[in-house]
Length: 286
Image (cartoon, rainbow, N blue to C red):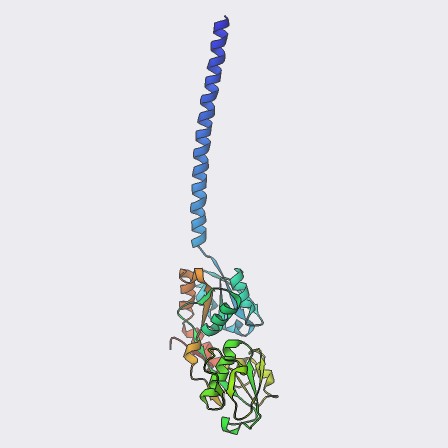
């Protein structure tokens, strides 16, 4: 009887070990399967993009609207964020709250990256060339500018350098050629004793009444309700400053980004530039 009792206990113990082993094996197998499935789903989610968040300046709202149907026709929902300046759209893009922004040229973005340690890039194809010129409501030509004239410049490094280089190309000043991106403090020769002031480019047209001339992208004249015609001179490097879509570097080869950049090269946008921007923005594809 005692032997029979011991045998029974041993049998029960062995059965328990076998069941525990089977349970562990099945549990481990199930966990691995679920983990594998989750990884695959994560990969699919990473490659799929239904919503594209685009940052634009307030002066480019109508531009985006002119091609919204084209972009959403690709199957994406476009969500725009509108900013009042030229800095915050890059801040938002770098932080990840935007997928791309659409308002700036390469030299400006390079300067922003250098100052802020970011790695944002403008993808191809680019969209348009902005006309950059000198305007005055007091004088009809650069020869009329008096000695001691006040010249308004943009306060960002890239566009200020562009304005100064334009003045140098007209023989009005001479810059320190050892400085790659000159500021108004790098004017080496100023034979006309010009006085330089600076302001954010979108508000620079407000200085037109106080300054003798201002140097800026012509589109900002139109945005301010002023004429972009009748400029005193224009920059000879307009093609260098083509505006395009900026993304984080890890997205520079993304298919969705390329599709957006390509689809806006259309008749609708060309017509918008012609009518709404008075020819101050030249399509890259024409």
